[in-house]
Length: 216
Ligand code: URA
Image (cartoon, rainbow, N blue to C red; front, side, top):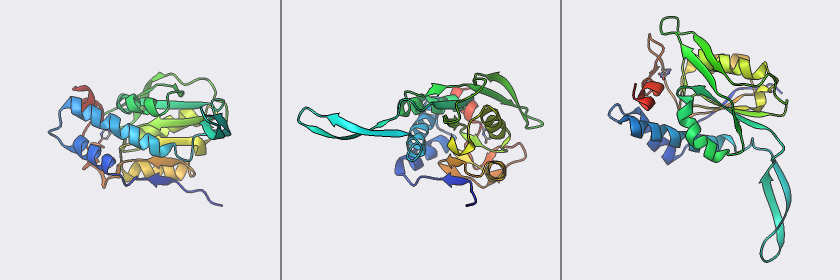
């Protein structure tokens, strides 16, 4: 069986609504931030569907016994928000995955070379190979940051097919690189846009997600 990158764009009115709010240049920072957080919540919900490990057991209700299914607390789950903009998704993603550990990764993009550099890395030295990792990167543009994040995570023992990427807007250059290097990976995004401008911004996109969310 040959593995292939899968990109899911969930067809949901709430995802369309919050994406349109986030895209609108007239949306104020505070509303932009909450629109992105909502997108984080619904996309993470979709991303966990066939990914969260569960255990089946019996539950005693006030009336009788019946079968029950719980998220397996023994399987490690981690969230890796890529700073800054990934923090905005984290707000609501943590409500979907309250038991997950959060490993912050700070990557800054050099505006002329468009290459990322790492200024903060809270990943452990190694992960249990069963660890499921959800990476939060709202803008998959040139692919520089997400490729660096994937390398940092997989070099520490995480299997690429246990990684889920939650993004808001994805563009072909990033998807191409991920597909060439990590077949088997799954991405959840609100939309796939046409491409990038000469400065590496996604078009039509939503602008600089970090600047808009933090009012800078
Ligand atoms: N990062 C952003 O915040 N926006 C883009 O369009 C591309 C990268």
